[in-house]
Structures are given as C-alpha cells and as structure tokens.
Amino acid sequence: MYLAFSSALTLLEFRCLSYFKFKGHLGWVLFLLLISGLFVLLHITVFTSFFVSVSYLVYSPSHRFIRIFNSALSSELSILAIYYFSAPILSKVFHKRIKITNDHPYPKRLKIKMGLKTVSIHTQTIETISTDKPYTIIAINGKVYLDNRTMKDFESILDPRMFFRVHRSVILNKNLVKELKSRKNGDYDAFLFNGKTIRLSRHYRSRWEELLQ
Image 1: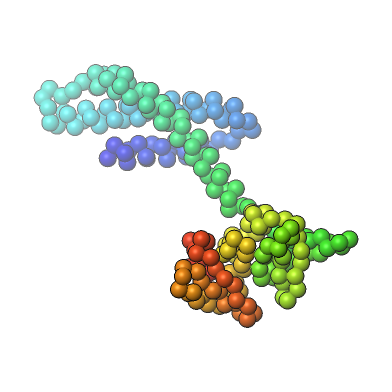
Image 2: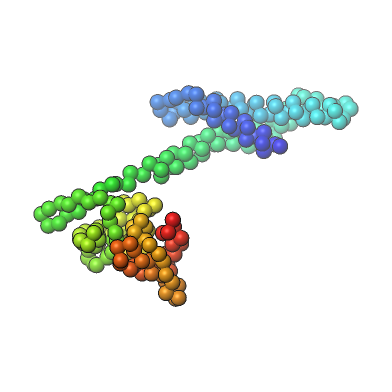
C-alpha cells in the first residue's frame, strides 16, 4: 500500500512538471527542487494523517499528529528528498533514450562509390552483405557492388529489424528467407526465395527465429 501511495504521488509529480516548459536546464532543475520539496511535505503529511486516523480507531488515546509528523520528517526527509528529486530526472533520461532508439534514422538508400562513379541503391533491395577483404560485397539482384565499409559499419547503418548478422562474414535480408534447415552440427542453412543458400553460424543463433517472422 505504501508503494502504491508513493507511485501515485510520483505520477502526480510528473504530471505537474509536464505542465511547465523551460528553455534551459537550470530553470527546470530549480523548479524541480521546489516541486520535489513540496511533494516531500505532501508525502509526509498524507502519510501522517493516514497513520493518525488508523491509530484513532485502534488505540486510545490515539497518536498525536505533530509527534508522528516530526518523527517521519526526521527519519524519512533525506530519503524522500532524494527520491522525489531523482525520479523525474531518471524518467526524463529513460524516455529520451527510448526516443533516440525509436527515431534512429535508418537510411532508405545507400551511396556506393564505384571508381569515378557513385551509385545510389535502395536498402530494401540488398540481398546479402559479405566480406572479401579488403572489401565488403553487396549483392543486389544478381549484381555485386564493392564497398570499403566494414560489417560493423553496415550493422549500425541498416535497420536491424530487416538485416540480420547470421555469420561472421554475412549479413542477410530477412525478407528473402524462405526456410531454414539444420546441418545437424549446430549450424543451419537459409534457403532464399531467389534460390540461393546461405550458411548460418550457430554463434549468431540468438535471432534465428525472427528470420521466419
């Protein structure tokens, strides 16, 4: 019950903070200091009132409000002050990270240099990306393009919901996977709709089930 009470007050604090907009971080922090202080007092006051009300029904004579209030103030002030000040900050950081993740600008096209020319390709048309040092080979509709970026570079550039690292030297477009077949040694073969077969290494098996979703 105490946890639910604290959670309800925390949500109310978040709501109060959301009504005000600040241009700089300093103004927001100063306002947070004020709001968190008020919520500490509100928390202790409501809790004391509840405790005294219950004691009135159970004990005779009941506990005095001022005594319980001062006791709670001395024992919980520092903990509550830290909680109500840090909770909005942690929430803000958490939601900011989620937004950055969800808004990751995965490109719809990639530019590849071919000698003196630069070719623009649609990422969704990429079938596989494999290594042939010192180059990386991008396969598209029977054609291959050489690029000097690494496999890790492509993993960070391409949408991970579509492109899966299935081998140390292969990134595969999941939309091309027709079926998977075990090699009976921990590895699998992926049969693609275009007739090609790609070997899947067991070292990258954590997301294999997603290949057929």
